[in-house]
Length: 300
Image 1 (cartoon, helix red, strand yellow):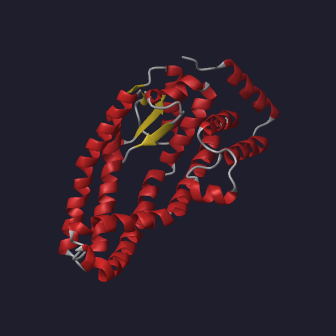
Image 2 (image 1 turned 120 degrees about the vertical axis):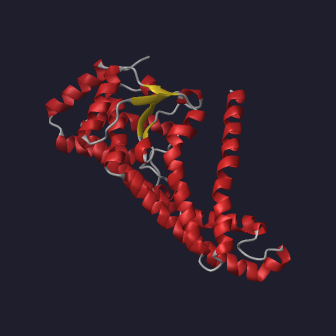
Image 3 (image 1 turned 30 degrees about the horizontal axis):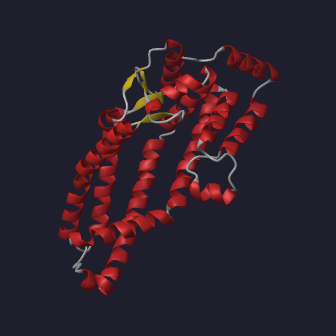
C-alpha cells in the first residue's frame, strides 16, 4: 500500500542521510590531505565502506524493511541446514522474511560478511514453490558461500573502485582546468565539485556495467552448477527459472544478455539444467524426482 511504501521510502532516506556522510567526510579529508594521491587513498575509504555495509546490512539494515524470523517448518529447514553443514557452513538456523508485503517475487540469499553470514529465504518462495524447488534454490544460495563469491566480489568491486577513482582523478583535473573558474571549483577538495565528482563516477560505472554484470553472472552460473551437483534436482530449479520470468526476460539476445543481465537468462538456465539432467540422471532417477515433485507441494 502507499503508506507502507512511503514508510520504506522514509527509512531509506534516513539511512542515506546517516550513511553517506560516513563515506563523504573521510573522503573529503583524504582529498584535502593528499592532493596528489587522493584517488588511491579514496579507493581505500570506498573499499572499507563497502565491507562495512556488507557487515552491518543483515543485522541492522535489512530488518528495517522486513521481519526476519527463524524458519519453523522442519520439513523445509532441516534439509537446508544439513546441506549447509555438509559444505562447511556452520549455521544453526534458517531465517524467513516477509517479502510478500513488497513483491510477489520468489527469492533467497546467503548474505553478510564474516560473522554476520546468514541463510535467508522469503515467504513467497515458501508459498509458491514445492519442496524440491525450494531445496534447489537454497542449494544455489549455499553455493555462493561455499565458492566464496561474497569475498570474490568484494575483491572485484574493489578493483573497479580503484579504476573509478583513477578515472575521476584524470577527468576531474581536466574539467576543472577548463571550466573550474566559471563553476567556482578550486580543486578536488572543494565541496562545490561534488556534483562533478558524482557525474564522472556515474559515467564510469555506466561504462563498466557490462563488466560488473558479467562478473556477477559468471558467479551465478557457478552457483547454479553447485546447486545441481549438491541437490540433483534440475526440474525444480528449471521451474523456478520459469517463475522468475515474471520480471526477467526469458530469451534475450546474446549481446543484450551480456550488457544488461546480471543473472543468466531463463532460457540459458533451463538449457543448463536439462543438459545436466540428460547427462547425469538415469530414467529411474527422473521418475523418482517427478514423483517427489507431484507428491510434495508446499502450500501454506
